[in-house]
Image (cartoon, rainbow, N blue to C red):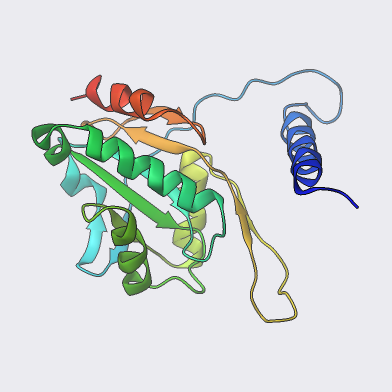
Length: 194
């Protein structure tokens, strides 16, 4: 019987293969380096009404794409974002906004997102759009996500990218922070833009 550690190693190896395979051009073995995605402004729904990133000019945005029912990656990323917000001074925090954009518009509502992000930090915002809006925004940020088939209980998972996107006060995508990045690196990325 395999241990949990062996299963996790196997899963990590499969993920590494998938991500490395995505770096080749039509299977020709040539490595292709993708340009940084452009990012861009978006308008989605929150419990306070439309959330328009243009209205947040002057703030550094930490944008994360996830979903409320995510069992593992989202809680880790949101907790890391909360730790970074808490490490900022109050003045820096006032000029920084973390937003979780749902990649599960079928189940996530503005109210569910509000409760979810508030669990991690009261200053975080959650936003959701239609399936078409979500796809367009995800494409502009280079976010991948795939809804998995329903399980017997009716639930399902959504596999998704795990980066946190750092948007400068001018609205331009400036950095993409990987899952597991240290709090001080997130704080440094924010402070560099304030």
